[in-house]
Amino acid sequence: MRLWGVMAAASATRLGSLRRLVPGGLAPAACAVGRSCEFLPVEVMLPAAGQGALGIETLAGRWVDNLLQPLHDPVTASTVAAERAFLWHLGGGCTVPIAAFAQCQGTELHMQGLVSTPDGSQLLRQELRGPVQEPAQLGERLAAQMRASGAGALLEALQDDLHPLPAGEGREERD
Image: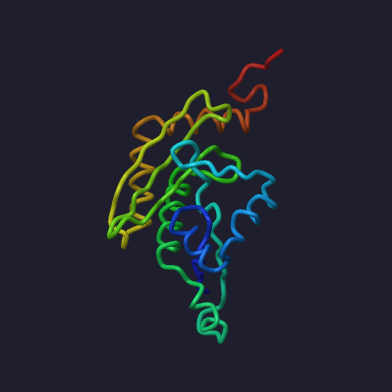
């Protein structure tokens, strides 16, 4: 199988690529889909890992590979690999409040990660840089750094809230 990393709309690089493909059509399309015309900067809100990226998976060595090659964006593939590695190493999924955002800056990836409680009352946000050639390692290192800073406890408490043990299995019954 081959996974093609196709440009997406979660970063300036990704937005720039889309603007070249659909000049003037990006904001109206985003407004129509999301019914909101306000774009939140990453300083305010980090997206979910891989948010806005499109992946197309094919069998390796097929004729369609040549058709998809122009769509492949190595920068997007690298940033999404870092974000997904971060999510995976924290044990996150669709229902866990974990965010990740990687951007290519020259020969480095700059990655930001966030773990919070669902209500946002507790929040841990950190960042890390690493070589663009090692995106998965960068995601893993940031996940380890955040676990060491308390993300593990936040995630463990969240799991207890999402999947409480039945009464009689280590917890007292609640009224």
